[in-house]
Amino acid sequence: MVSLPFTRPLGLIALLGVLAFILLYLRRPKPQNKVIPSLMFIIQDRKKSTKYSFLQKLLTNLLFLIQLLAILGLALVVAAPFIKLNYDVTLENTVLILDVSASMQAQEGDISRFDRAVKQAKKVLSGRNSIIMAENTPLIVLENENSELALDVLLKIKPRATTTNLGDSLLLAKDILGERPGRVIVLSDFLSTEGPDIEVVRATLASEDKLVDFFDVSNKAENVGIVNLVVTKYNTKVFIKNFNDEPKKRTMKIVKDKKVISQTDVTIAPNSIENFIFDTPAGVSQVELDPKDDLEVDDIAYIATPPKIKNTVLLITNEKTSNLELALEAAKDIELNVVNPPVLTINTRKEKIAPFKHDLIIVYNINNVNERDGIVPGTFDDLEKYAEKGGNVIIAAQEDSKEFKMKGLPPVDLRNMINKPTKACVETINQITKHFEKERCFTTAASYFGADAKKGAITFASADDKNPLIVYSEKKKGRVVYYGILDDRSDFKTLPSYPIFWNLLINFMIGTEDIRDFNHKTGKIVTISKQKVKTPSSTIITSKLLMDDAGIYEFDDKKFAVNLLDEKESNIGLPTKVGSREEREKLLDRQSKEHDFNLELTILILVFVLLLTEFIYIKMRGDL
Image 1 (cartoon, rainbow, N blue to C red):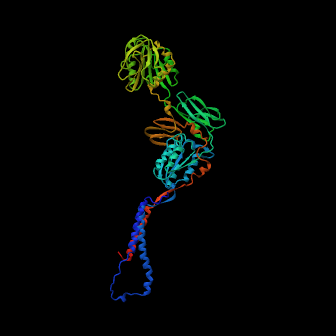
Image 2 (image 1 turned 45 degrees about the vertical axis):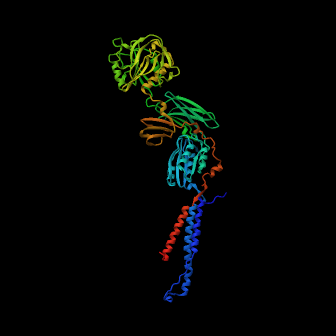
């Protein structure tokens, strides 16, 4: 069935009006006899009348023709005629999806994949242009602007150090075009590591009459790169992968303050990963592979640690040696001072110290006032003031704890000593007790104090009769913990979990920052208070920071390391799966598509011109 070139074919009935007009025009009025005196007076030269007779007939027929065409045009408008024409959709709307991921930095000779993409992008700008940067989270950097502005934006875009998400970028392009005709051009190496499948999304756009072109800018690049980095307070493990089919040699350097503090020559087998461990340097440092290769962004990995690495701890005790002291000395992140009462200002190494300048103070097995080498009166008053001003205090129970005048410092009220074996079990799972989550009853005690936790205090562990053994509370700006396990009447001090527990407790009390919070992968978005942020390439003022570049970021008076660390993104040698070379050469040629163009408006304009012409003609003839 052949469709008529009319949207409303029934409107052709209006053409009957043309027939009626012709019939009315053919109908002539009856001639009337009139007497004109002095007829001969107005008779002009016969030749002159003959000269204008043809023009008069033509003008009479021209008026008929104008009116006929006008009525015919109005009748056709009712039927809404249209024609099919080929036209270039890129002349209206063009959406460029520019891959700015880390792999686009891969070099081949003096030109990178990103340089090739920008070069091709300049050729296809037309009409109203939109530009999407395809990172792990797509970003719209230009929407519906002219080619001149689009070119200016293109020249300012730089490749980032993130993974690739082309699927979501295509969906974003679909939203930008909406119902408008247009063309989406993707310039990428098609090493897509995140998001939906691009071929599925491409088919979705094609079903909505959108032209989608893929242009592959991949090259023959080789790479050996850092694909993972595990940073802890004590050591760092770096993973290096050789993506080539032959072994590669590299020199791994640890650099701090622009000085090489260590270096190691390594040989990595084909298509394999090697890992290396080294002590974590304090502050900001980096791991470098030398020489650099075709993808430099993964030849360097940055490391950042919290501003404060070691916590200062003061142990007040009259014991010459103890398992607690040994456990604290073994911790790499604790700077320990031990003092023996009554003197608190000189440590056991005969060094002068300021006792209340420490991050945390532990009171453990001390002699009471009036005893030999006992504490001086007012010691607990000073400890309470220290806690209220923001200090941290741990009070360990001992047999004569009830005889000490500790005032309101402990978070428990002690009762009598209970001399019966009991299990110490975790009451609350948190960052301190998580080590005992699988075995909640972590030790036994032969004796312990009956006690009541004060209002607002939190019991971390208790005896099986519910008497609290480890209790935490806040004292104005500071923190206080009651440690109710008597080490000399428990096997806890001999267990491997003993030093772990004390290290976790001290870090919790002091509020030690997690080193993992200072080392991130690219693509992370963090919300901060609005402030000036120094990025690896610029300085900006923002409250929402996208970490899409590798390097050191500075905000909140701290430094943070950000690295690519993505094995898929670093695998730049993978062959593309998009089209053949012959197909790619044709992708950026302008493509035409047949579209229906409605003629209603065009015909109405012509009718208006005809009516205006008729009016002018009648005016000139003197009928108006």
